[in-house]
Amino acid sequence: MIPPLKVNDDEYFIKILKHKYLIRVGAIGDGSCLLHSINFLSSRRYRHSNKKSRKLYSYNLRKMLTDNFTEDIYDKDLKDFGRSYNDLLKELSNKRKWLSYLLVKYISDFVNRTLIVLYEDEKSGLIKPVQGTAVGDFHKKGRKYIILFWQGRVHFEPLYLYDKKKRK
Image (cartoon, rainbow, N blue to C red; front, side, top):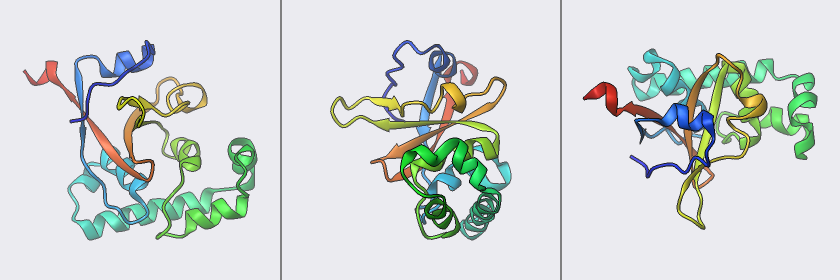
């Protein structure tokens, strides 16, 4: 379990985390840890698969993301971040290359989930949400959410919500 979250009076986080613990589950570190984390939290089939099958599952998701990534999506959501369309497409298509945080919005829309990304603030030691991952365009009413931990800002891991009220 990770330490309690500082939620900064954000009603969305307070609603999600009330009476719950976050448990880090771990993810395969093969360049697709972001996709492994998403698959773990959204697919029972993935969770019950062996490591080889999990890699194939995430590879297939990565291929779908690559095949559906268009210049229109880039222009709408990613153009202002200083990376070219071709650079991001190359990153998506290389299964050994880790996916940058810039692609979280695109992936969130593709899998139709709100991706909430948390990290440990080095200065305060508190676990905090990455700016913008649960507000604005990232959170669409009625969407299910997935909470991820961005370990050292280089490795994503799924966070499982354990509801202490329901487990008593």
